[in-house]
Image (tube, rainbow, N blue to C red; front, top):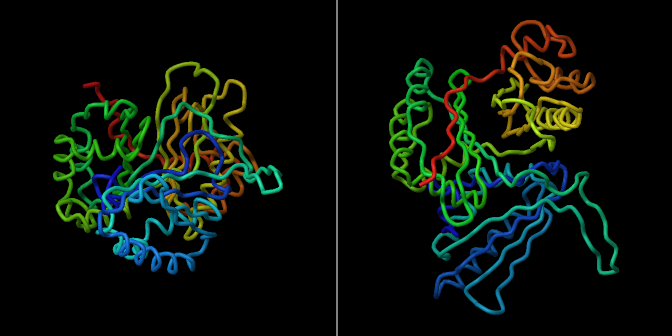
Length: 380
């Protein structure tokens, strides 16, 4: 549990993904659950703040409904649930400056809060009818949750930043009895940095644990002078704003249930999508990975598509070198999906035909990210 004001702070950036396994849930309705512990004497201020927030959020595109509930056992425990058309509109809103302004009145009213997000897969009506609401099965996977943050550094500082990021010591893996930090992987593409994290258990607790480690704090301070966008991690409000903007949610994950045949390598690609095409490109890549993962003997072990606005990053685990299978690597094995992706990306020079090896090679050359470091956290 964390304070509401920490919900988007560096101690607990708002990095919870609607996905925690292999389900295709980006088209499903989303249920968001917020658990709150209200401070003694602040109940009326909380109710006033909620009423204002409820009125404002009703006009946010993609919002369907919300409810405010109070525990019948402990009057200090409250619950806010909201329903959204899908994960996309919610993630766009929760990471916005508008959202940060909306929740400010609640900051002084709560001791602790915890946010949970679920795709709605089935629903039972009062008449007993059970309906499937999502075009996807329930989650699959090994319980590892992935998320990422991304930011840009000043042009010309890339080598210095890469050296700093490659040199940090891994923090201890064990967070608590049920939460473990499994892996942190860093990539760069030009002056853009992407840090992907992988945990089991409570993602928020793991991120808070990482941010408190001295080796991680030292790295963050060391790269501060090279950031294109200034940040002050000592100022909670400024830090919340920075990490909220840096959040790169996982919008889709594909897991191949077959046992990997060979050594697994991790790669990342940052797709140069046309303006306003980020969500569409992410959907195409997600579908391509789903098709690739069910092919017998597929070298695709796992794929996670991260997307925010027009920043689209795909982290893939393969049992073959990156260049060995350009179609699989770039997400263009299916001819129709390759043609659709070709209309969504923007490559230098003449548009490439992504249904050909030449076009795929051109795409790979422009979107392959540089692998900086891949750390499996150490047990305490």
